[in-house]
Length: 223
Ligand code: ADP
Ligand code: MG
Image (cartoon, rainbow, N blue to C red):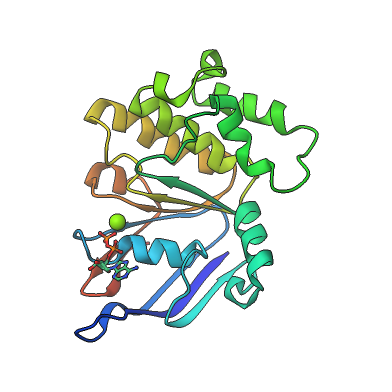
């Protein structure tokens, strides 16, 4: 499970501190999903980065399956993050010089890759409808296809937690709907916890739990 307790985040500024998150708490059980909505600049990405162990909170605690990741030494934290958390970003972050298949396999390279990594990557790419595109490079793909590669890559290491930051933000509506379907269905199939940030009300209503981030505070709308 994922548990964030009393998270505060301040950024230092020459004019004084900017407080982005005040006492934010969030909880998610295995296999459940949450969506976070909020205006631009409200701190959604900051919160996702904190949950993703990319940015320590100023105060408060994050626990993922009984581990306090921020208590780990840096090298172990990087390993923990790579194995346990999958990320999908708005601009996908695919490596342009790697093929679709290689991009999906990237997270497996940090450790000695499992023998079945490539077969698993192929299965995931088939599941997201890209079986015919394994040898293509990102520049040869549409935005929606890139996003599907990013989803497959995020799941390749069987993470317990998937984080998606405005994953359909750059896609037209029809493409966003297909991407949204995958983002709802795949983590369920793989029993992965998921936290998604989106501006899309129609995507938002498909997740188990909804939070609104307002004035640095997270409000649970429904569970
Ligand atoms: P959102 O994702 O909801 O649009 P962000 O989390 O990106 O919002 O940013 C929230 C606020 O925190 C913004 O005012 C932003 O300028 C500020 N901020 C984010 N990251 C940093 C940083 N590393 N240093 C200083 N200010 C930051
Ligand atoms: Mg953001």
